[in-house]
Length: 162
Image (cartoon, rainbow, N blue to C red; front, side):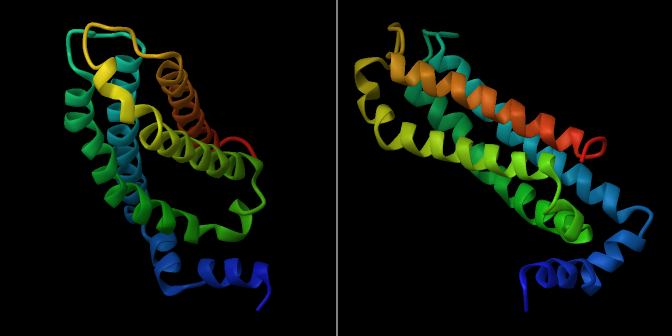
């Protein structure tokens, strides 16, 4: 089975067909996907803003402990809904530059978060409260905001651009 056949197979699956034929199911799934992204990006943005110096009186570690689990929990909404939405139009989406850009931006955002938590966040005790975050932490915050904004923008533009 070649690559395009896999995408055609996904689009012709019973689930994809059922979602496409339903008047309400596709918009409900899309709404779930958007709510998941609101939680994901919203919690990430709150943390990123703290890295950029907002609310310096709040310890970075406390903000991380409070908001970042919501980012992880949101994946329970984002991933399954995104897969189902993708399945409904897989052959077209794999050739859509906006969709491919969205996927690349997601990968970069997750990589940025992974690098930040593996390296920069380990030294948080030295800049946890009342001190400006070090340049690598601020850079990670800016990069995160830019990348997640790009993901959201691409998601919205999917309906209008190819």
